[in-house]
Image (cartoon, rainbow, N blue to C red):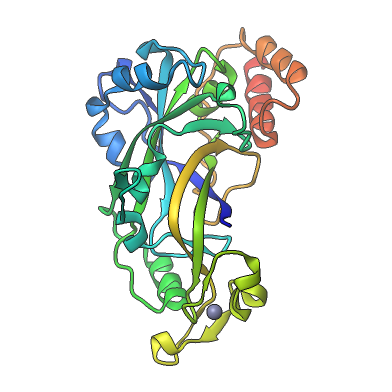
Length: 300
Ligand SMILES: [Zn+2]
């Protein structure tokens, strides 16, 4: 038996290839590998592999790109799950790639509706192990307390999502205008290890009391010489399945505020509002709210 896990993900910006590798917008403080190396993407060969499977455009010009902070490494997320450095760099012999690289070519969905690949709005075209950012002071103190270990670097898996702007132009507009910056990743893991006591569980019945009843609470740990650390689960034998747009609120690390709506025209507002009316279940709630706001702004 295995566990299915989800976690919130933040975008790091957006760009398109017509800008010749120059990031069209860079509105995040965190240094993005892909925003700085946009010219290196080989979208054409990737599209040959997946455009039929995901029913997405095979034309490079139809895509925009979203570098996303797909998973933080070695620190617990808001659900009390953790992807360790050891696991992320582990080579999976069956797949012939490292655990973090299992994001590659996986679909981009809305609200984890991953059962039909043809509903995909795009896919993960590249993935990078980003360990180039210093950990902000506030988070460094928080993570030292929770994990029992100092984390001077803010390490995370950076995934590059290619979004088909022709298949879902309104979703793409939400990304372009920075109205949508939060996603969710979905993954499967074979087992989890308790950070407090090291207990390994393959299903809920095997949970120790820390995880069963005390997740995200602090307990003294023999593994850390009696120091109190947070009870969270370290996921092992991880395979990332997809990155979704979701209607959940942003996680504590999302950068809030800073409206970046660039739309000034008024012509599209009717289209946007019509789409919202005809597709009430097709896009996340938060996206609808933001698109509505954009449409109203365009009207005025
Ligand atoms: Zn435990």
